[in-house]
Image (tube, rainbow, N blue to C red; front, top):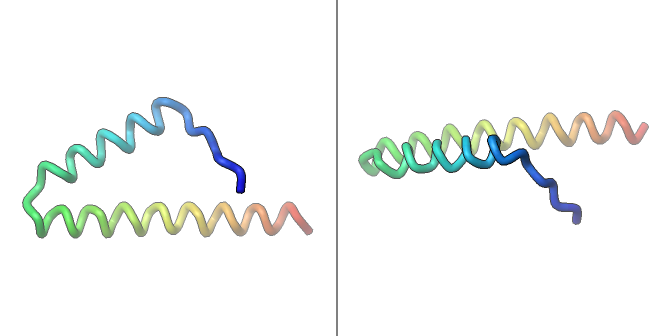
Length: 56
């Protein structure tokens, strides 16, 4: 398994988003983490599609 090294600004952006989420009430946090999960899942799926296309 290879590990991708993200740009520092990308990591900082994620940490900033997590801090904002953590400051919200519980119900808001749940919705925000669900949205974050959905976004990351979509990015990973797109990455998988791109990787599969390059392998052909």
